[in-house]
Image 1: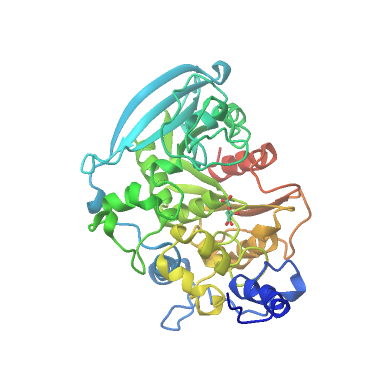
Image 2: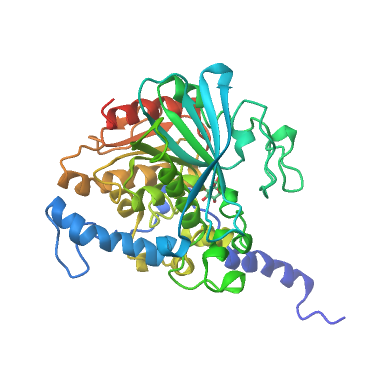
Length: 429
Ligand code: GCU
C-alpha cells in the first residue's frame, strides 16, 4: 500500500486536523475576544424606546420575532393543533406521605390522535383552603422518576440513557423510580403551599437529533416526518416549551389551582426551555432559569465554556436551523441572551448558576440579567441592585434575581429554598 507521507510526518499532522474540526472550550476569562451586544432598546428602524408602552408595542414584538427567526423557531399557531383535551387518568389522595393529592392528567389533541399526549403529573397541597399557586416544569425523566412515591406505572416512552437514571434500552425500569426526586423538591414546595405540575419532555419529542420524527413536530408539520426543517421552523426547545403552555391551559381549568399564579421552571436544556416558554406565554408570572447556560441565559458572545458552535453541533435539533450559522460567527446574530431575559419583563425572573458549572458560563448567566435591566426599569421593576456577580450562596435582586450556588450543574434543595419565597413575593402571597 502506498503511503502519501512518511509516517512521522503524517503523525505530526494529526493534532492539527483534529483541532480544525472542533475548537476546545476556552475557560480563560482573559481570552474572551471583545464583543459588542445588540442594543436592547433600539428598534430595527433605529428608534430608542423610552416607555413601557413603546417597549410592549414596538420593541418587544421585534425581539420575540428575532428569537423565533434566529434561535428557537416559530411556534405553530393554535389553529394548527386545534382543541386541547384533558383527561384525568388517576387521583391519589395519599401522595408524599399524605401531604399531597397527586393527579395524572393526559393532555392531548383530538385533531392529532397519533400523538399520545402528555401525562402531566400534578401534586397539590392537601386540604388547601383556596386555589394555590403552581410551579410548572418539564423533567428529564418520566413521572416515576420525579416522585418519591413508588406506586405509578412505569412510562413506556423512549428515554435518554444516563448515569444513575435506571434507564435500560431507552426505557424506564424499577431502578428509575425516584431518580429525579432531589431535583423536584415536591415536599418542600407543597409544604410552602405550592402545587407542582411536571411532564416528561420526551412525551412531546424524544431528545435526539432525529427525535422529531416520532414527536409532535412531525405530527403538526404539514409535510409529516419527511419534512426538512427550514430556517425559522421550531426546534425541540420550542416544542418542549409548547408542552409547558398546554399545562398552563389545563391549570386554568383546575379549581384547586390559581391559574394566574404560575411559575415556569427548568434546569439546563429545560432551563433554556423555561426561558423560551416564559418569553412566549405571559401566564407564567415567574420565570426560573436554573443553570440554563448556552442557548439559555449565558451570553452567546462570551466565548467561554460551551459555545454556539459546540451546542449546535451536539444538539442541532434544539434550535431553529439558522442558529447553527452563528457558530464562530456570534456577532452576526441579531440577539443575545440579555434580550431573552428582557422578554420576561415586567414579570419576575430568577437566574441561577452553580460555581462548578463552568460549561454553562455562570458569569455570562449573571450578565444577561444585569444587561436586561433597562427593560425592567421601564416598568419600575428593580433588578440585582449590584453591578458585580455575587459570591456563592449570596442571592441578589428583586424582580430580577440571581444566585451562584456552590457546587455542580444541578437543581438542589438550596435552589428550591430560594425559588419558593421568590415566587411567593412575586405573587404577593
Ligand atoms: C449539555 C449541553 C448543555 C445543556 C446540558 C443539559 O451539557 O451542552 O447546553 O444545558 O447538556 O441539558 O444537561
